[in-house]
Length: 98
Image 1 (cartoon, rainbow, N blue to C red):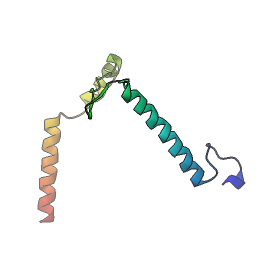
Image 2 (cartoon, helix red, strand yellow):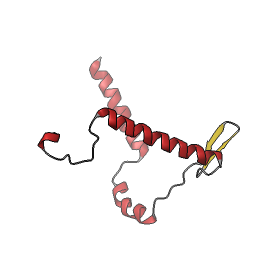
Image 3 (cartoon, one colour):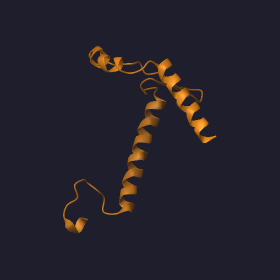
Image 4 (cartoon, rainbow, N blue to C red):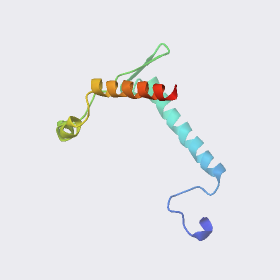
């Protein structure tokens, strides 16, 4: 592909070079996380006495998104109906196979 011209994305010349780049990037990121963990600077993460605690994420769906999606959700069956449909389908499939 290189003989045909420049590649559309930046790519290392060899697989070895690509792996070396990825290893170096991983080592840098791990060192960064380790430094932050030592100083208790990881956002929403607590590491103490060998235990890791991650705060749950809160929903951040904007009100506009909920409003825009409401007409679409109105077309979906409620979960009870969907559950019944699945049970009927499974029941019919098992009778056909018997």
